[in-house]
Amino acid sequence: MRGIILNTVRVRDEDLIVRVLTKREVLTLYRFYGARHSYINVGYVIDFNIEESAKTTIKRLRNVTQIPFMFLFDMHKTLFFKRYISLLDAHLKDVSRVESFYYDSLIKLCETLHESDVKRSILNHYVSLLEKEGRLHNDFRCFLCERVVEEKVALVRGFLVAHEKCVHQEGFDIEKVRLLFEEKKTLLFNDDEIDKLWRILDLGI
Ligand SMILES: [Zn+2]
Image (cartoon, rainbow, N blue to C red; front, side):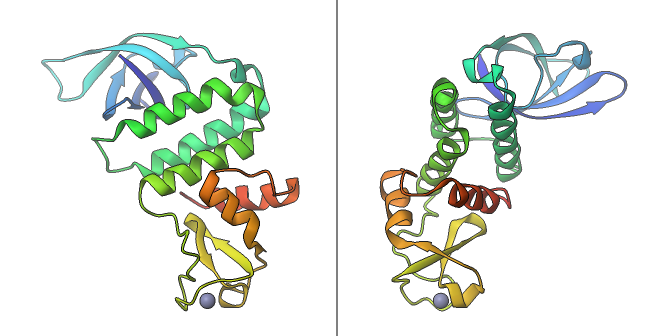
């Protein structure tokens, strides 16, 4: 089967506990001598088998091969993607069953990252994730005072919407945020604004 590595934790000498996102599940598996296999790395897409073990409750990760993607040759893009996957791992912390949206949309992201701007593409993905989870506040109602935001939109962790004065933070032009929220397009934001959006995403998803 195929999956995306969400997290690895070293145990004993070189063994690893590996969390893998598949189409339907988040699996926690045991990998012997993980450190010798460089393709066990956060953000990598792998083909693998699961082996039941009579001795332990945790199943084993076996026959791992990495599925290559072009963007992985770009260290800068790889770092941002890995960071996003780590944020996603924290978000899916206590989850075992998932909808196929997560796996399918991340694979699509991996396939296109080599030819697109990494931060913009991930921000688009994040907004579709918020929408999928019913957490996208496209009614533009301030989460603090509950009145509609009409001009500048301040965004806080989780892309919650607020008035600038309610959170004492500089906002973004509402047309820009509206295009992002409604069409998953970042094209109205300049690069500084994209960095700002990234820093908000980086607080946790
Ligand atoms: Zn407000």
